[in-house]
Structure formats: C-alpha cells, structure tokens
Image 1: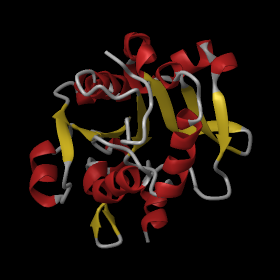
Image 2: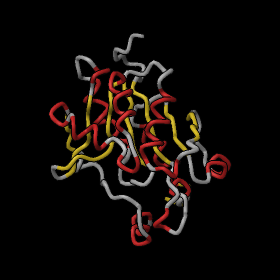
Image 3: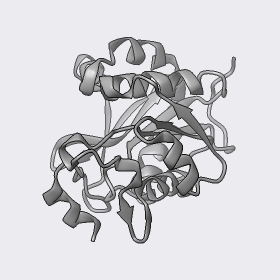
Image 4: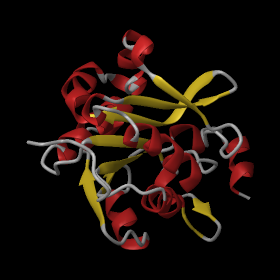
Length: 206
C-alpha cells in the first residue's frame, strides 16, 4: 500500500478517550463538561480542524453514554473492552482500527488535555507533511524542552509502537528507545499540556 503524503489529509487523527477518571471519583473523562459540551467533542474538533482525517476515537468507560451524548460527526468510534488495563490498550486498539485506512501517519491526542487545540495539531502535522518519508515519521510537540502531545507516528512504525504499548505508559517506551529519531516541534506558544487527572484539575475546564 502506498503511504506517501498528499494534500488529501492522509494523516489520521487518533483520540484516546477511554479513561474512567479513577482519581476523579469515577467520572469518565470523555464526558467531563467543557464549554458546555462533553470534553471528547472539543478534542475531536481539534483533530478535524487541525487537518486530520479520518479521525478515530477510542472509547472505554461509559462508551454507550458517550455515543448517546456526544456529537462526533464523521468520527469512527472504536470500543476498547480492555480500557481498564491502561492507555497502552487504547493505543493498540486505535492503531489497529487505523490499519485499514491507508493513512500514512497517525497523530495521537488525549481527551484530558483541553489546552491542546487545532493549532498544535496542525503544527505537528505539518512537520510530517514536510518529511521525505512521512510513513517513517516520528514527531512530538515540545513544551519547555519536554516532549508532549500531540504525537505523530508514521504508519511504518505502528506495529512496533503497538507491541511496546503496555499499561498506562502508552508509547513512552517506544519514544524513549527512538528519541534520536524524533522531530520535536515547539508548541508552548499555542497550547497547554495540562492533564485533567484530579478534582483540583477540574478548574482548568472553567
């Protein structure tokens, strides 16, 4: 399959939105309210408006309620029955769902980072667009010298990323092993990398 980049949005968006919000008292993160709507809608819109297509969303906790309440036009919803095992299982499920799309790369974001919007998505995506071999691309956003999301994986890397994704570590082990190959894109001027993990963090949604 030809996985070269063209102007028809061949970078897919992958939103990991399965978390059950254990430290939030069991409130599924996808359904946290942000600007009057479920947080998952905001994150999905950031991927679409940042130029990603298709957009696949991995659901887990309260998946049925997310499907009922959230408006996610044009998105492919992927159920992860193993979501309680951590982010690694959602990353594997998402990459598996993208394997038949023909996308040359997957741009990954997390549902609990509302400070990451379309500008950061577009900036990281552009770094792949400018690459000679996008299918081999490895790009991360950077904030104050530290890696963060969005993270982009060329399609040729998906199998190895999935194989290394365990527990709540997601792709950390893969990124650590391949850090010399990473293209880092500073997004500190256009995004915030705060996570919504604790009740105190809910202030970020106000």
